[in-house]
Image (cartoon, rainbow, N blue to C red; front, side):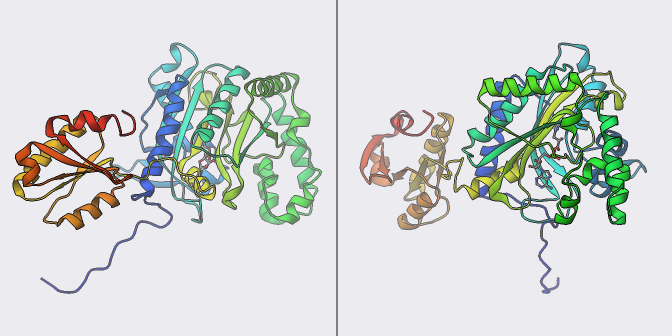
Length: 426
Ligand code: HAM
């Protein structure tokens, strides 16, 4: 035995914990998103947290920052290279191909949520473990479906009470117009007096240069050719159909022809939800259509569209808008027993309330009435049940309404029924 105190261990850098009371907001945001996704007919898919490294290299794209700089890649004990998933789309595609889900009814509509991992420089709203709720609708290239997916993301954000966000939209073209545009953009960029790193980027991934936030680069590229001006007739028609459907649905958007997404698989419709209260990390969700991804991963030539909503950033956005989604109260009912026999009876009573769907907890240990009532207050309870010897003998419990400070005696057998009418959700 040594009396030397051990150092405390902190969470890894850039990895957030969600502890109470903030964790209630976290769950509420995630579950509200998941609820709306289910309402739109998406079925849940539970994906592995790590995958074969090749999946992301091939699916997300070698030249993206996500793959080239941000992956948590390591050799497992068998010497295989595995990677903690940086995003969900590639994994969904892998699973769809592996389980032949694309051989049945199309589109295949799948939803998922959970942690993703990117070795980014941590800052407010940019984490190394991030949480997303996402969907993928695979197998049908129909602009109506693009509109559905975008409107669903919009509903998710509005249903948690967010207001100060906007939807940005563009088209990244298709296989017939994108290569010619890429060449045109590259030609334009390579004539500019760019530094070596930016020139290199213009050579391997010219679209990314349009995303450069440095004012001098933005100025230089102000007149760069834009994909929207070079769309093929089919891609243009597709984009116009998407915006038309969004108009029908009453979903407002701004067209941002300079939008660049950080993942390589996008074609045609591309979108991002941006919140102004978040500083530099303003993207609260984004997605788009991907025509070639499935074939790229060894599957059929099927197109898909999806989104990933950032749960961490949605929470920050709610904070910026001073809005809460979840009821901060831990329980509705809190039991306080005076004496051992009363405590034993109270344990059963609280258990009955829970069985009746009422959120309930009780005081443990040997706290006096005052201390126990403080516990009721901290738990956010609306009702305290006080059970002492007198009540036990009479077969009743004193129900204190902590909001209007009234008190009534209720027979022990009728507590669940009596309180059920008062607490939320009953
Ligand atoms: P993404 O734009 O890379 O897309 O990520 C989606 C959302 O995840 C972002 O809008 C942001 O809210 C959140 N996010 C990303 N990185 C971080 C981070 N380091 N810290 C906190 N939040 C972050 C995708 O991942 C695509 N798989 C979406 C998709 C699905 N596209 C088609 N289908």
